[in-house]
Length: 459
Ligand code: HEM
Image 1 (cartoon, rainbow, N blue to C red):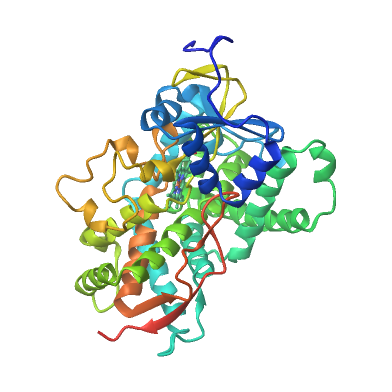
Image 2: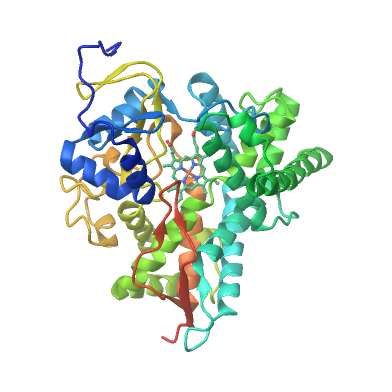
């Protein structure tokens, strides 16, 4: 309908009312909730939450419509107004021409020669992660390590150095507090009276604002350093500042605050996904000793005396297949963050009314029996067989699809592969529970603690 939808067209099937029950189920296990809806109602389902109309899409072609073909009418959802703290928002919230400019610029900042430098940073942080875990190791498993905390710290340290440069120390806690603050704003924006609530002295708000201020100080200091160095630095901040000062704008961003808004989100919001991939990776390797042996053998052959450098990336095909399989079987966003219909639209013959939040069921797509053989088996080999898995490209979308495709994929792949290889070469991580890590159904990734015994490898 426009492909727009007239009022005679029905909404997708789904439970009527039941808002509180839906909220309860959605918050406690979104994947399970989604599976139930699909089982009862089919490939496109509408449901309601307090204050919200929602829809969830399972079918491969309909997912492509939401993310690509009809993408201009399904914009990334953000409740309420952006606060003064984030008034320019981040790339992930914009659409159309503004998004295109920002996206092209960010891609250029991550690409080219700099990729080598970023890979070297990740390799070095992976060695540090191993050093920390080695200090906890023992023949009896040592004192154990909370792997969620360790992997978060690893991803954070790498991303901080990529974005801000070498000489900056920012404790991981600041990133956590800043992200908690953004989540709290989200929560406050969906209940009435947000302005009043935001002025209350809530501990998360107080702590979050203090930490945001410290991260801001580091970002503005990096801008000063970029200028003082004559723009010779290689960090992401320096690339944005150089383009703004010398060309008038960096992907349309033309003030220090606009750059800060873009980069504070880049610093804080993309730690959970690599952490989740690493935690699920350890879970599946421990549960599949044959796969783990192959990863270890590959790491032994590629790592030079236990060390690693940026060139290792292309020599770890099996570890790369392990990542593909982890992201298939347990993607960090089992259900993607919602897109809001900006007008009445027609989707799969149903009317999606303006304002509906449309969810894409990524994990269900990655387990669809029509695309995947033995869908629940963890089998990295499927990525090495010739031809690669016989599914359409848009049936496997761990990094998204369409204009909002992940900007950090190359970094994310290196975070996973370098960490897994350096750890496998020297250590075995044995989770204390056979259960997978706890998914964070309110947002992205996993929640800790998730503890593993740490043993040095003998053979
Ligand atoms: C295993 C790790 C990762 C996975 C699975 C992942 C997945 C995704 C997905 C699914 C999206 C699209 C979201 C949507 O359309 O709603 C996305 C967007 C994005 N990701 Fe990642 N991501 C990962 C790591 C990273 C890292 C490490 C960074 C940066 C350092 C990053 C930066 C971004 C950015 C900036 C966007 C927004 C792009 C846009 O809206 O144009 N990601 N990611």
